[in-house]
Image (cartoon, rainbow, N blue to C red):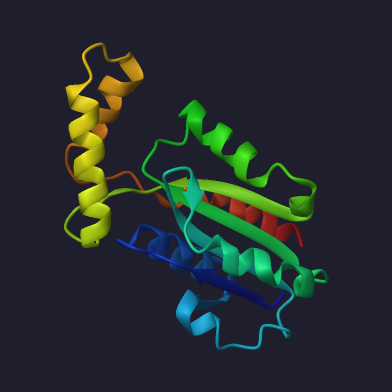
Length: 174
């Protein structure tokens, strides 16, 4: 099956997952800016990956705006975030963003990535600094907030090839 894997990455985690996926299923892999210029009509499956920030998927509007013309294709989305895969907030995020009927034909996956402050853009670094300062200033922190402070205090990488296995299984089903 001819598959296109398209990604939008800020610090490299999403790019890594896209490349792993494309390599495993022998798909074509495109950065979003390149994919926007491509004719994807010849593909039987389109996989879109991007990073999660503040409860939304970056550049997801591009994928959504193309879904109607891809009705004849198998569609998948992988979301890359800083939270571990077993964080209950991950399932809440997926339900909130992909629970509508318009996503009935789209398979959605989550892949934990991490934080790489060294590769983050200035705007993202600033937002994280403000968020961290507000979180640290809070007098009575919940355990979840204390854990979040530990997680986002410095760069970390929890990406792993094992997290693309469900994506690969879905693509092999097709």
